[in-house]
Length: 321
Ligand SMILES: C[S@@+](CC[C@H](N)C(=O)[O-])C[C@H]1O[C@@H](n2cnc3c(N)ncnc32)[C@H](O)[C@@H]1O
Image (cartoon, rainbow, N blue to C red; front, side):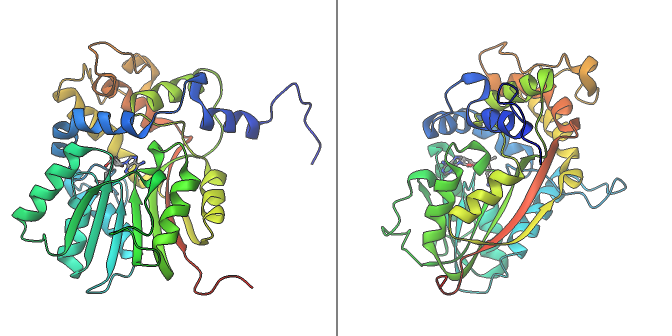
């Protein structure tokens, strides 16, 4: 391939600049992310039956509710772990615990969930107690990027599997987090990631808009396919599957826009979509950038560059020769 002149960054270089430092802003810290969820736990927890993630719709004709569609996404993720009764699993970025409780109840597995939000952990623990699952499920405040591997309950080689639903998008050191999680997996153990994906580089106004949204959602830029693949490789994991299910999750953005608008975001006509209808920005209006971004979610969800990765990786059974 012909070399591009250094003065004009290639798509790939521009892409990486956005990944690392949107608009030159420092990447959000884990404390920033924790604060976002502490302040908005009630709103996001009430949005989709306790799930704080996208829904999965089979087709445009699928009329499933957001609650049904989000549970379906949990099942798509955890189904890829082939969970068996008694196995130990790690939920990286557990939210208020719904996915962990669903897996523990449905598969008689043991789950450890971690989050950087103390509010979420408190709610998740209360839910586990209510469900009578405290013997099988536990929740801890822990940062996946600084996971104390080797310390209980994060023993090295101790988990049969792990999953991360929409938590990596918040992390500035995704490769480091995956490497730490990989060390806790038993040989042959699987990791499943479900998260927002930037399919290809964005430029100009679109890049600015994506950066604003990242800021509102405390994300240090959105990873592209290569960043995910590299992070898996650097963690010493084998990539088994990389599927873009972006079209199946797309209705999520309008659904969440309606909910956030109802919860105090200035929202506007969430179904209006498009650049004209939503005003186009994630502007700070009443001090809660997250809620104020509600009206921009449909535009974000309509960007063809926004995809969603379902990734399966495995810790090799034996170290490479
Ligand atoms: C969008 S929510 C998803 C919650 C949950 N996975 C679900 O699907 O309902 C993102 C979650 O990632 C967690 N998170 C973000 N950064 C993290 C980090 N560095 N370590 C651990 N958890 C993190 C947040 O605290 C929050 O629980």
